[in-house]
Length: 362
Image (tube, rainbow, N blue to C red; front, side, top):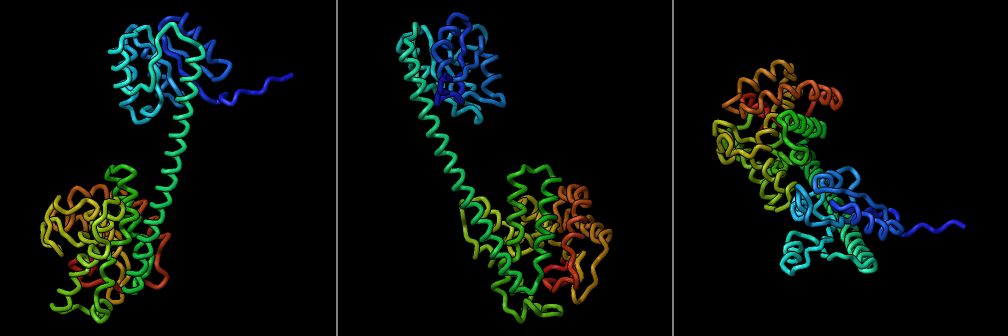
């Protein structure tokens, strides 16, 4: 007759002790209920604990040659990947000060030798159950956080679409320039989280145009001085619509909306920011936005060639654009051209532009 598998069979305990006889005693107690791994020193324990298949709990001796158990515990608690693994010290050091130190380093329990098998099993079972509850709670929080972030992104993109309808601009412009910004950020070597922020915040760059009167926003010709002064208010309007937020995506969207018309030499608008005072995401989106405007057909101008647009942007380094972004932008061009072809306009983009000196952008 086959014995039913233990309900704990999938949980793994790492037993760390430099004395083989102590390892044997502990594994004999644990093996009927759990999988066990063993380490005879601290170095081996760290390697196992930080490996691909992490243990669910660690029974850790204190006095070992080389790295002590206290040092192992401290290193594991400093590592975000192993911080949550419960550690129980199993040691012959039975002074109150020893126990206090172990618990202060992050251990969940302290068992003195010689061990009592029922006590070891009870403590292990309790802390595994607590760890399982913690992981399930973290999983649920992570799932809920992901749902909220998805909702935020959807709101961001819906607001971006609202700005497009107001501006009579095709959605493909926003799609293209968002990818151009993403690719430039990747080529610059930014981390995946920042690259993701750039990509999802970029569609909000012209949100403030919702607040610009139609007779100015949709005017087919050149704006006069009064109209241009009103048009220059749209970055501040976009920032006001988005407001101040602690959420990184919404804050990034606000930065992009407010600063994508600023110029490296301080001659941009609305704040006249200069150099690195302009948020990096705003500087990246500025290049992506201008590149798409130059290479897209407008009612008052044909599309520029890619070569001419790239040359114009390079010539603007240190004046219009962050000079440190030119090389990453150029290295991302092959991928950008694939995006350009994929999201090409059938009949030419509708206007969102003004003087060519500003890259064809209002």
